[in-house]
Length: 476
Ligand code: BG6
Image (cartoon, rainbow, N blue to C red; front, side, top):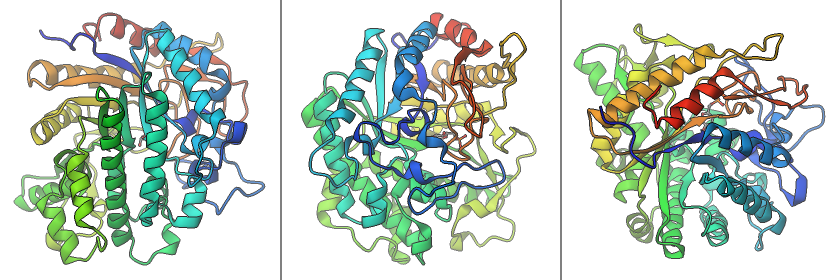
């Protein structure tokens, strides 16, 4: 049986704001993650207008990776990581986002971090914007609702490309750019585009227009990056969620297809350099992108990506019952429970086969190498009296997903270049702000209130993943 290819990029993934902490250290500015309070499974995170006293902002200190990265990378190296995915906190480099000159201390931090990875032969895989837009850009410019933000992003991207051109090869522009398909969700809109929904009366139009500017920014960054180093691998990054029809009723089938189109047009533009027909038609009829120039279209064509990075956690199922398919607005409203799948404690379906399905779908659609840059199980872990953590549920989840990925490589011929498990070390959940929603192979002693020693310890999954990497996925 074939296996994962030689040089397969095994590793783990995090994002700067979910691990670093040090939110004001060495000149860092406030980012959107710094104004998000802690939530729970039932209570959404609050987005406050600036940092307010007496609120709990879990990203301010996170897991103190900023000070402890050497210890953490040594643990990743012990597991045998070939790569490590993180992001560059935009507001460490440009504290306000619209500054002319970058913050040298911020740049130096990532120099040191990447050097530390490279010392162990760990390749950094870097996302430029992972839910970390500088807060000043939100307040002053309404984030990507403003065309000017394209220039701020490109300035940031080029600064990073120039600085790290000999250290980083794999880049992604915007994390899960298509999350905002769910345009009534306050959190996705502010984290992805820097939009505060209170300020708008047509969320859908704001989303399409801002996403268009982001796509132009992404394409410009890709194009300029390639000029700086032609060896760069420039990736899209989407949240891939296969959408299943709840039944074989053609109405359900068609709705699932529509839902899929509404989630994938972002990466369609990044790969094809043009809008797919459905999106072009839909946005024209509903006047959703009022500012798109001929120059934008040329830029989109010239800045297409080399690979698709994607996250995979779950699938979704939709029902067309009582729905007029030609008038769907937010397709999220049609999501129903899939009777064949179990869900985790946060209500996310567990569907390993969906990963194989997705790898095939994305291959058929894009004909590009694929990189699974996030996959994992958020769960509550129990520390035993002797300090051990038996996270067999996590091993089970990851094993089943990797088995399906292996089948996609072996039986379906998918070109898969790597796999980075999400939250390889416990971190602050993006959705809820909790610490107790843990993904890591490495446990971090910190609770939802911020108490704990921050000490790191190895879970059972640590040793399991070490063996997976050692055998290049032969033993799962
Ligand atoms: C992805 C994000 O959506 O899912 C991560 O890229 C996030 O930043 C991950 O942490 C898991 O989601 P959550 O809400 O469990 O942290």
